[in-house]
Length: 340
Image (cartoon, rainbow, N blue to C red; front, side, top):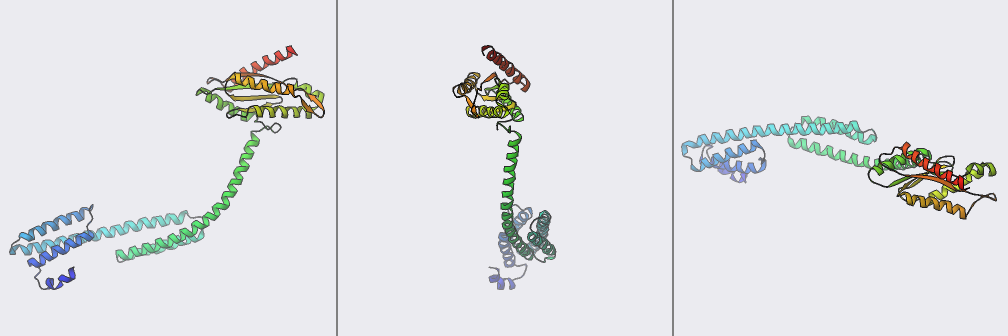
């Protein structure tokens, strides 16, 4: 260690071989502490010290004065450059931390405690500009980081509580929003989807058909519905609509298939599958009401439907698809009238 060589150093001439070798060895030890592998200044200093050390091993007496001066100049130059670099790094670190604190202070709108801590830390950090040593600066920074960490931790706990309360309120609002959305897209009497919901679903189904999926559209109309209203009253007519809607929902409950009430006694189904299967399911509904007629206030009310279907294509528009299914439904209704 250096202090163990103190007597040797004090007893030697500054230009003696012993003094120069001691200086070179001391610098070698210093290199291990302060040299950075990727620092050009450090690497230049390392090369120069290596060159001086090499010359010392073969130098003549008359060269010692030159080597001593060279050693002193290189050490002083390196010290000045390192001092400048350290001061610059302090300034850079300070500016970065100060900017972070200012940003933190400006961004805090909830949590007065954290805002106060950040403001205080910013003021104390500002005073670190007058730090006399690197160690003093680092100690001050570490102290402020600890203060901020404690404040942030406390703020985080407060935020968790606030988040819990607001999350419950948000969940409640979302549930109400979903309920409102369903109400907007649902027929109030039958609880089937209404016309806006149908139009959105039809547009989606046509897009899917364009991609190769198989979808069909059915337009459905109840037979002789006006007679039900005239003979049994409008309440009976409403009950018949609800009963028919229930059978539609039960029959077309598979994924990708939905039933809608367009208006009055007109319904529609968007069916994921082929027309043969769709016809079979609609015929099944008619057969169910034939075997078990609908009863209302002791009156037997016959319910049956006529329908028309179309396989959806990618070149369909909503209007053209509905028009084709409508034409098929009217042909079906005419057939019912002729056989009645």
